[in-house]
Image (cartoon, rainbow, N blue to C red):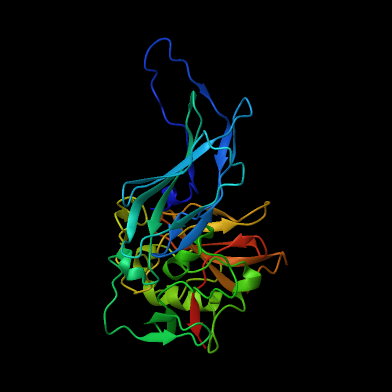
Length: 337
């Protein structure tokens, strides 16, 4: 699912064939650029402002767009136009469709030159994750909790003697959405730095501690000897849910030694993690491979780091490690006080 999503928008130069040996078109200069998210809501509206492409001889450019949901080509300006004002196209996502594989292409054209283009492939989602995900193991009788801050309702599950959210926290007062696309907030939850995570849970709940995770591990493993900040062997599959995001299976193709049962009801999904140490927007890493959750525990040997619990699709163990409090972004699961 998410590997295609992280390609924020693919640049394309169409492969136009020459009509004959004497037809020797040249390429326009530069690369088309514009900003669009790849996950969107039905009815979202965006102003698309192309840039980056120039006529090699200083001539004017024409522009047109193509949308796959209606197989429509819309010409915005002809190359013969003398209008030199910036081109702006208002793109509206249809109200009545959801799913993946919908394309938008912006073309720059000039007589005697190959077209230059940029393509964005959209996945259209709603705020109800059950529209996009199948196999979530939800039932109508699941306990629920509504966050009074934003009205978001979460399913909950009791594991041992503690009540957990069955979904990643999606409170948008802090953190960033998956792939920097706000439309995904309700589907994947937000990704938080530890500094954000420790205060992100709603009133009456707290960021899961290592003590909470230890109680979960001991309950599922039936082994009181499990220790804090060590891996929990063989129980990752009890937390993972065998779900699909539209047509794509979460967790990729796990090996035979990881049996996904989700017997705990925790519903862990592989959304990866993110890093914001560089310039620009956070970089999302290893979706389909990892589920990574902050704990409230700081690293006593390094005040810049805090402890995580995570699952990798090729290991049957619940793993542990530390990461930078300010630049590493992970999911949050809250536990009732």
